[in-house]
Length: 531
Image (tube, rainbow, N blue to C red):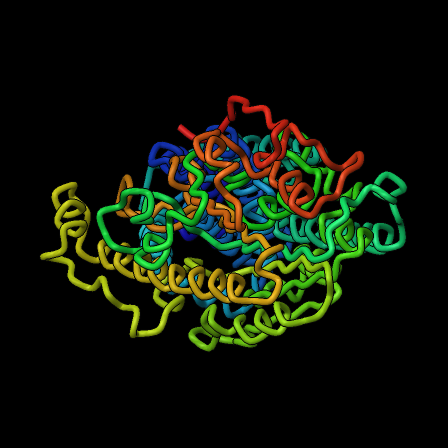
């Protein structure tokens, strides 16, 4: 047998050919994009060739002999990592939204992520073991001899190509030995830049809104931002499970919007665009102009950020959260299952409603249906449990959905049922407050969720409409004047204009044509990044 750890150049040639073959197989199964297949093939074979050269030069040192094995192992793990991301996010590995989701999480969310997606992670772990195991065994397989001089020329050629291509930044960043540190540094730089922006924006007072506030003696806006809720699973929108009974019972007093679309399929970029003038076309604007909370404060509003998200304590979202006069983070969970239910926001919310400020903006950030769904509600809300007799379960089974997958739909719907109770409580508490006559309530999630709507998959899936089509409800004491707006298409990168309109704030940051509740609103065709 030929030993991979020997200085046989033929074995290295064989290793390069086999690695290229495996890269193509990963592409053929859909776990590598076309461009990344070439990048990984070139960086992989170049790294293996370079590792072999190092092993041969320092062959007397035992650690040098395992370098080719370690390099091959890293690249196989890298391809499996890419496969996990493709399965769960449906995006390329260097998509910054994916990187924000990875680096912007905490230990509690990471454990819940594994709990939600363990099937996909285990699947790719098995693929890795089989792929790398067979690759390694094939290298030991006895084969015909080859010309060492030719093999060495091939190796040196790959090393030269490796060096040349790594002079270019895109190729270098496709190498796993550079990839993670590079994107982590990009994320850290974005945070650093955002902190500088935060300090800058906190100090400026835009002249554009001075003396442009409508005269209101008492005005309270409650803006509830949910998480991972698709309208396809709300009975309010026709879903064949009673997931929103409490909202259904008061729907005649609400404005129910029919065609609302998320600005982005992941939380951070979605909220960046909702809170600022940033748009899908110009997402960087959130770094350049004041957010809604700063504008509200400048207009004389007392502002609150009440959140059940642990991640609002750090990262980009913490910038917006800490712009508020009062930032209340109710979720102190540090490990799986230790986080609080959304009810934890109610005491702080009640206090905010009772505070005597004449102008109040109360932003409530709920966990709602954030994976893992089974941690989002208490056992008393586990209404949908049957995977055999329930109508929806039967429909899913008839479509070929697995029994284990149907359990995810059940837990997701239970989380929607629990959120229905939360919205009812938040709304009725506002309606019974002393400021009710001059108050308004707006709810929508950051984005939707794909839960068995097309396959056995449950989670973030930007390739399907359920990730983008979301619910939105509005209440005040005179909603009849808005009835004709409910059927208008609207994308939430414009919601900042609606919020400013509700706050009575005019100026260069407000465009009434983008405010869906304004008489000047102009409906436009929404370009959606969905099938």
